[in-house]
Length: 519
Image (tube, rainbow, N blue to C red; front, top):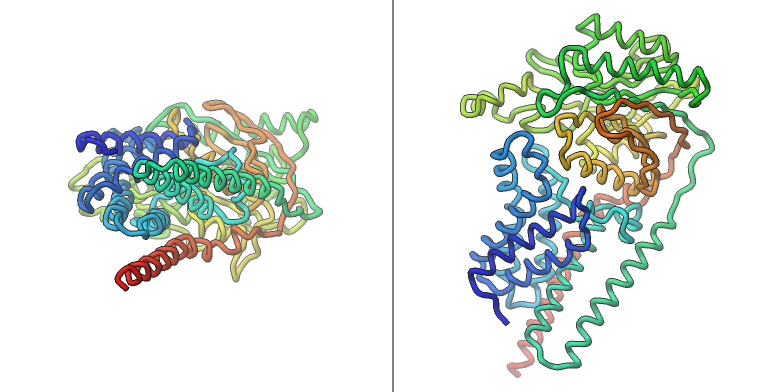
């Protein structure tokens, strides 16, 4: 059976769209493996140069579908972004097509896909890791693997299954024997069943918490606008979060909610530096005086150099003094800073709107502070940092200067993407991180989904979109660490080396059989 040449690129585009629909908020996860398999079956019939093109078409369609939320910055931005991301999938198409006549094609293809996920999440300019196949599995039996083998291991399971299905389809199309036709699908079904059962068993892994608890308030102040004008006029963000904090204090005083040990405001809850603008400092001081508990404030701070800024979390203790701070480490290129700015702004003047260049922080996001008169390590992640493995793991593990976090909070400002699919995708990443670490994660956002995710990635509470809200949650402190976090580096390495080892074995067996046939 063959596919007409004009139909092949169409199939690759459709396959890419199918895989893209597996990501939130459509969550059609059951399309992911078949979509990849269709792409592989088509590519396996082509020459390397054509495989490269088909892989690019597949990747472009996937990115345009999954990450359409970047179009809030303009359709050209989405198109350019998708054109870049498609390169990683083009390499898969090239490798599969180049090795199609050997027993190594599946192993080499899996290794290339996994290497692309790893590299794409880190390069260039810090990378973009939102396209990992693992993020399509939240709520499926596979999510039981997250605390054991991390998102990398889950992606490996998915892509290996897709290659297995592609092999089965290719075999069935070329084989007329009834017995062979029954064996191949039976093997595929058996493997899928065993993997699913193992994933369900993994859900039972649940490290015990510590004996202590922390009560944390989460504030969502809301913003008036959308897109690049989301934050409104000066001090709108500040006043909204002050107002909601006053309402939270009223709920505490009337016994509607327990008194929090500290509260969390989101990223950019103040749009100006409280060390530079007295009015901003006064708003925060007033909030602390009213709520009578420490506040973790997200702000934009000036410096460290001229025309530079940092996205910062400031811990205001109960006396209104800044006792600890953290500067965001993973910055969004062309959003918080502009690579080669002096050159690019001349070509693309709109980049001037990015403003002062953001500078990444250099310390781990763990604040060692007093919480209810007890020393605590409060882990802080700011927005897109959730997608960076090393940044997240540092919060859980700590380093030479600090212990790992006892509780984990996320501050995010996604108001620019209001009404887009970005918020749902960040929610899925948050849920994956909770499962990987078996930690509760509290989320404070400017205008959507503020709340709590439990250790199994279940949403305990999520605030409504474009509303102001405040809630209080009591969570246990935790110090135990999962295998997914401890061994992530080895899991990343194994996800590429194991398929390569398989390719080496297949190559050796193939050479041996060839040699025997000539005897």
